Length: 362
Image 1 (cartoon, helix red, strand yellow):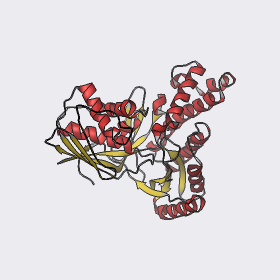
Image 2: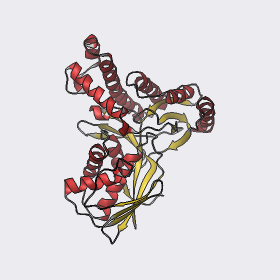
Image 3: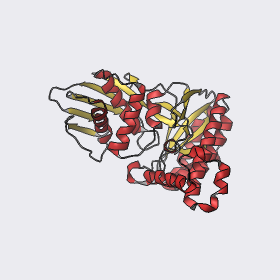
Image 4: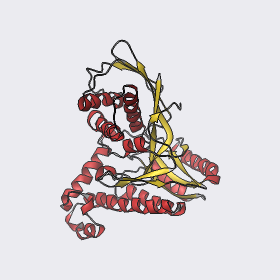
């Protein structure tokens, strides 16, 4: 059996900007989906997931199942449709230590791990660009989540000790040094799960698109903050708020890139705080539990800044913390969260990683 892995990703800043033609700053992390692959003799694809169980399907005849299986079957669907590939029988053995529903992109990591395994094992000759674009297409068209390109891109293109500054319009990108030194990236998972395909995420996409129409432009690149203020009375309150978030978040991404080039993590924390406020108030994708974690973290010594990450409506918070104080920060957040909501918050320290590759790590 051959083994391939794809990392989850943490988006440092640039939330809900990727599908709005904006800038993002993700980093591939040291949490992975691993796919073992070998031939099977009966012409079927047999999938065994450590977390979800087993199923099999005919690679020549399948349809969506409205379940986790679609993240895997969708990859076969796009390869068959776009690259006219005829699949042999296969066995796929899937393991993962990317937390589910925590805003660390477990679904993109699964898609990218599967396409990377198929590419390597069957010698399909796919480029990096093929892999991230086809994985996104599978999620958009087969799973039904209208995600932007960031998650799959970061999982394929990740580079250890670097974040990726990506322009989602031109697809130009730059590796930005991520020298955390005495700081570390900490993810606090609220345990509040979100399913992006159930409507909240897609609704925000529609609202952001409608805002462009109301402002009379085709892209957020054509809309400045001053134009936003001038036209405020001519558009709906929701359109104004959604546009305000996208425009200011794009500016925060550019500011964060500059800050990282100078390894100034105190300053980066300030920008994260601003991002959270915008996501909670202007884009309205946070929730009570997440806001509680953010407010708690802001009061703790050793936290330079924090914000919700991922699609929203639950998930996790990213905090930039002093390494020496992570233990006490973690303990305090867990205790206060448990007392307030009766839920357990999980805390993960994450490091940067290289992108999807042939490897066995789990």
